[in-house]
Structure formats: structure tokens, C-alpha cells
Amino acid sequence: MGDAIGQVLSFALGVAISPVPIIAVVLMLATPTGRVNGPAFLVGWCVGLAVVGTVVLLAASGGGPTSGGEPATWISWLKIGLGALLLLVAVKQWQGRPKSGAQADLPAWMQTLDRFSPGKAAGAGALFSGVNPKNLLLTVGAAAAIAQTGASTGSQAVALLVFIVIGALGPGIPVGIYFTMGEKGTAMLASLKTWMGIHNAAIMTVLCLILAMKLLGDGISGLS
Image (tube, rainbow, N blue to C red; front, side):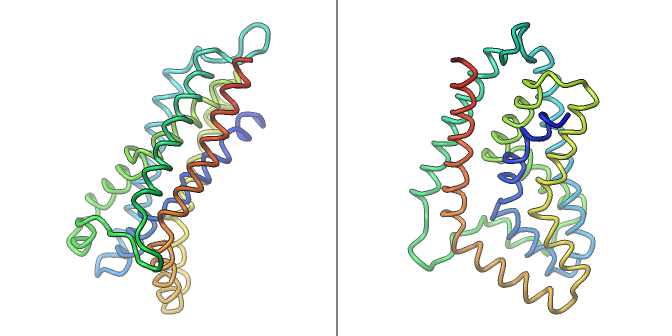
């Protein structure tokens, strides 16, 4: 179990540090329905990670180590492919960065957050965590890494749960601040939103590069 949990920690941190979803949940919390929609977004986020992770684990059920203790070859190639895709995401993020000191343009739908129902907020959370290209690649990579350890089904489930809990810290911390710190928390969240809006491209670029190198390194090691 320890090996499986260790494999997912960096991927989970990569999912948690997602500036645009964090900005979205901060904006959502500032709306009249934020007290309901913020937690709904967080629940949807967790569901999205759970669904993608479970599907990949089931698909990779035969991807444990070989009889010689080596990783399954196809999972090593999958890691190399995911690493290459994350490199492309990093390049795209850097090329699309705003001018120095300027905030990145946010999606137009964020201007309609005050009209979101709890169901729509939950759906947005699930889409952000499960379908967003960066998070999708990281969740697939985490699930493949878990399967590669050959751990028991119960241990794999625990490792996936750890991944979901850590991956939910990004949107979860603003929700926690909102409910526990009152007006002081509102000012803190506003500062967080501004900082992440300015540094979104840099955060994403560095994060994707680091995780791409990890995936590529693990994949190459598994083939050698």
C-alpha cells in the first residue's frame, strides 16, 4: 500500500495546484448562492477525480509488475506518452501567458457564476477535475502508477482515495477559509484570486514540466 500511495503524491499535488478552478470556486463563493455552490463545486471535483481514476484502474487491472518484478511494458509506454503530452501543455501555457503583471483572460462562463444552481456548480467541478486536459493526464498517470505497483484491490482503492483527498485541496482550501474565517477569509480569498490570475501561466508551465519529467523518467526506467 505504501508504494501505491507514494506513487500518487506528486500527481495529486499537481491536480490540487490548478489556478483557474481555484479562481472559479473563489468567485463562486462570493455570489449570493456561494454557501451552497462552493461545497457543490468541491463535491463535483472529487467525483470527477474518482470516476476517471476508477475507470483507469479497472482498465489497467492487468498492468501490475511482471513475474520478474518489472513494470508492465505498456504502462511504461503510457507514462512516456503522458509525459510528452504534458510537455505540450507546458509549452502551450507558456506561449499563451499574458504580459508581465497582467491577469490571464478568464473563461466567459465565469461571468455567469451568480446564476449557477448547485447542480451546475457540481457539474462544473466534475468537468474541471475529470475532463480538463492537465488534470485528466495527471489522473490517468496516477491511476496507471497505482496499477503498476501490483498492490491489492483494497490498497489500490486507498491510494486512489489519498489521491482524491490531496487533489481536492486546491478548491477545498478556499471553501474551508470561507466557512471558518468570515470577512478576514473573504479578503484573503480575493488576494489569492488576484495572485493566481497573474501567475497562472507560470504556475502551470513549471508544474507541467516537473510532472512531465517524472512521467518520462519513470517510463524510460521501466523500459530499461
